[in-house]
Image (cartoon, rainbow, N blue to C red; front, side):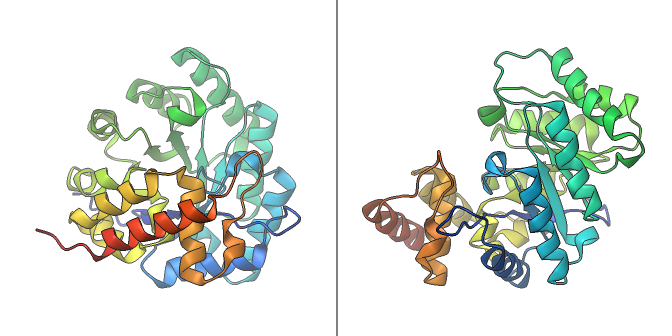
Length: 298
């Protein structure tokens, strides 16, 4: 089990609320982030997959990060800024927004859209971004989520980046849901922060030296996840809660459940091209989730 004093632990892949004009609702987002931290979360990752980060522009990122700083959040300890871009220029600008706000680090995907990219191509993309950042470069969490980016990352690739950019890589978030993938990163890079995105793998990863998670379920039940993230203590309820969510598109499902918890239907709104769950699906989701939440271990 990891003994790193600076472990990320339980970081929430924070959902992003939008108003009726499609703008980010800063008040709702800050209030939700505060609720997560008050109920067991250690930190917040903004602009990630659950937060619809690929739809959020650089200017908006400055507004969001400024709102969290103005609200008194400890940016250096609590906030990780996602970087999701298909161009090197955009990735650099998104990274600089995170650094300018004093964030703990960045959660950076490889370029997305192009299929069947080689390991060399992915390496060169990251290297180009890192070189452009120059002296600003620090604390990058690589983000391995091939289901969204169409790019595969390996322990060898991570090793090459560590060798070329010493001290720049903070760790990796492996969101493949494949234990063998996560184990490969743990075996080779255990000295860094190895995080999983699939909550069902969390306890096992922590038991084997992992540093925790950045995950969507933390928007809803950070209290349930905390023992797994810190002590490697598995809870069968976690798998049930995840199953209830992923029966629907997970980003809209998380928002529907936040809306239910808060009694605030505005939370269900998605940014195009994504769509909110309809009323019937949202009700069925709430019923599944609540049933899973009430389930007791056999």
